[in-house]
Structure formats: C-alpha cells, structure tokens
Length: 309
Image (cartoon, rainbow, N blue to C red):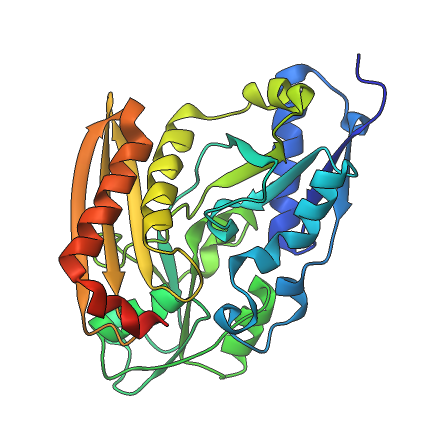
C-alpha cells in the first residue's frame, strides 16, 4: 500500500508545471487517488538558467533533464514529467520512459504582429527562434529572411516579440494550447511544408527501470498510439544524432494497424535537405524509425553531416 506521496519532478516554467499537473490529474483519475497522494517537486535545470546562448553551445537537450534525472536515480523522486522533444535519445542508465500521455497537436504556430503567415513576411524580416530545425526550415522556405536566437519561457519570447526584437516567432502549438493561449496564434503551419520536431506535442513520464510500483502506476495512463508514434520518431532521431546541433524533423501517425512516418534532415542554412517516408505495422514502430534514419543517412552521404558539427 502507498504510504507516502509519489514525488513528481518537473521544471518550473508555466508550461512544465501545466504538464506535470496534467500527468498528476490523469493519475488521480485512473487510480481514484486524492491530490495529496502526489507531490510536485520543482527543480531548476541549467537549460532554464542559461538563456543567452544556443543549447548546442552549452550541452544540448540533457540540460533540461540532468538535475531531475539525478534525483530520479537517487530515489528522491519517483517520477519525472517532461516535454518528450527535450529528451535525449539515450537516457541515463537505469532510467526509462514508462508512459506517454495522449499527444496534443504536433504543428508549429506562427506568431507575428506584421504578417498573417510566414509566406507573407516582408523581405528581410527577422524571425526569432532558438530551434535549429525552425531556423533551417525558415531559411529553406524564405532565404531572404533573417533569423536570431530567441530562448526563454513562452512569456519571455512573447514579450520579446511585442517589444520588436523580431517580426515573428515560432512556437509549438501544443504548448500554447496547454497554457490556455491558442488565441494568440497568427497562423498554424502545415506540417507537410513545415514538419514538426520528433516527439513534439507529447508529454512523457520517466522513472527508474527497477521501480515496479511506478511501472504499474503509469501503465494506467500510458497512451498506446502516442507511445508507438514517439518510439518511431525517437528511433529515427537516434540514428541521426538527435542533439540540438541538428536540424531534424520527423512525424509518425497511426492509421488503423499501420504507422506512417515522414522525416527530413536539413543543413543549417536550409538550402540542402533530404526527405523520406516509410510505413509498416504499428508493432514495428521502432524498427521503422531506425530504417528511415539509416536510409536517409545513406541518401544524404557523409559529407552532408559535416555542416552539423
């Protein structure tokens, strides 16, 4: 019998807290537990503290999870709630992703006070984004546009946009919906033209591999279709490095008992890119992602990846 509260680790941003509360609420409903059966523990990560440099310069995706994962491994936390796209493709030994909540909208949102869509921005306009994928896609679609680094929490980026630091910015539509701000979006970008990051829109819950109590708890909230789709996307990402130095897009969706995947890799300037589509049985989700990644790597050739270093 559970005698103390499950400790759930999370970052402290409004979006991270919204995701942690969603996870807690789903667990409460699934198991008939009261709110005090869970304690949400807020931790500061280096990725949150250092916002004046690109992630690629200070260590990559692990900067948003390292402090939380240290406490998971030590037993100070029972669970950790993350944005799946922030997760490194290789987790620390002894940890695993045990559940994914139902996925939100995977698309990117365009926000601008000067244009109704990315295609309508005036020549030479400035787009603020920290994502190398978004930077590369902007440069692919609109080579005339300029880009600059926009890091920080959602409200920080919105403030920078309002103050005129850029003419437009791009954010995950899922995050804006979870924050209750979908109405601020200027346009939603078509994923066939502006493909999302692997695992975008999905919340995952991480725990120690040997924690059977956590595994049983989380099984009740795991969303099978999201698990399969993100497994496929993360396998694709793993083949292609998947760090914050790499402009990579990838999206898997389920169609009955089959899974359909599309992926893209770009050079940072957006001028060279390669795409792939693959599909297969849902039970082979991980293998499909791996196959797509290897095929795309062979298609691009080793010289393509030198621009990523």
